[in-house]
Image 1 (tube, rainbow, N blue to C red):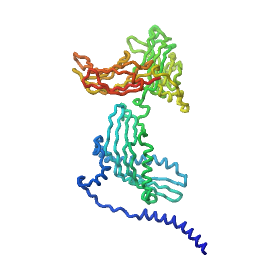
Image 2 (image 1 turned 180 degrees about the vertical axis):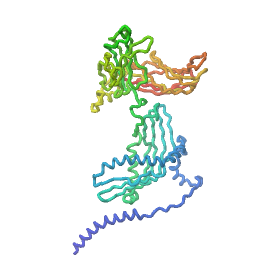
Image 3 (image 1 turned 90 degrees about the vertical axis):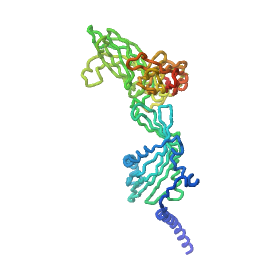
Image 4 (image 1 turned 135 degrees about the vertical axis):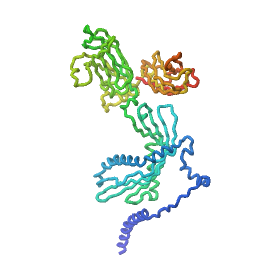
Length: 544
């Protein structure tokens, strides 16, 4: 009997201990005493003691504690009024996104279905306690909002495991964040920035209620603090500065986001058997060509008088921004002294057909237009022979190391390049704007850029002492401009009748050695011969 009693005692202890713990858990969860809620007592700050004031410091808005932060009550009011609609829109987006993830687990691990039983972010929207705006010289806007959200969130997800429904509930989500939001680059296309970058400047605060089968899991001693710290740590690992969450706003097809990636060398060699357009059975042909998506003036060859088989052998250089989608458009015209020039034919060459650093020859059949169903295209209009070479800039060699027709499996080719001073490239000059420019007789400023005898001008801004141009100019060079200067002058042009047609509002001469060594500068310059005039200029040097 003693042995039997001992065995039964061990078995009873083995079953009784877990059952007792489980019963105790449910008693603790469901029957724990609730906090007694009393009416709030509102008292002036001057009546509180120092200990209580220290506890309240974390709740005081940043615009009170820090003069760098601005109040945005108007924005909070706007979000509050829009919140009922934002809540539905955000919840629909969350539901449509998460349900796709749920579908991947249905049928696995005994899960028959996963559904949202209830989904709302509550009636209280996030509150921005202040916004700090940084002044930068780059083409970007940097802001740091202090976000606090004590929500009445209620999200219930029901898992159907075999024949049992298991509800999981997330309630009363509370978040405190200090993100840095960067809008860059700023571009002249709505919404005026192409990317949104977000990073956290400090560890976030996170709190919520989590219920399983109706019981509050967060009430278990030790588990609450563990989950709170773990969630905040995981968010910090992903997005704490210098790590950044990048959100593209404008896609690559937007011209405002394009940047030069290389140079296209175009050699117009000859044309064969062109149409006879003149009275004497001849033509005076020339070729006009440009890259698609560019607003720059088209390039032209010389005119070959009275010739149906002209030879040019003329070379040109064009800036390439997207070799995957851009095409070279070529038009052959018959020059006329009086009337409009007659079109002899046209053709296009997609740049994706080119291999970087390799010269490729094309013999093109001239067409009237690109409509394949046009019967006029069946007529023989002659041929045009060209040679094309695409040279990517150094930083783009990894992207375009293979043939440009999209083989992503090709590995990048690492190359060793000689000293930068021996390489050609493109000098990109962006005239962003000027401040406090004032003329004696009129204020209609425009900027003139002079480099190695080549002159380029911005548009005229009428009646302005702080013009904004944001215009970029390109200079293709055979070698790096180590010992060169670039001259930029602000000039005012009169409107209507005046004895003073133009007058200088100030100028600046910029040495380019720093641009070549650093690749880029963006500075504000004091204008010479101007009392208070300033000019913002960005200059880049990219090599082939």
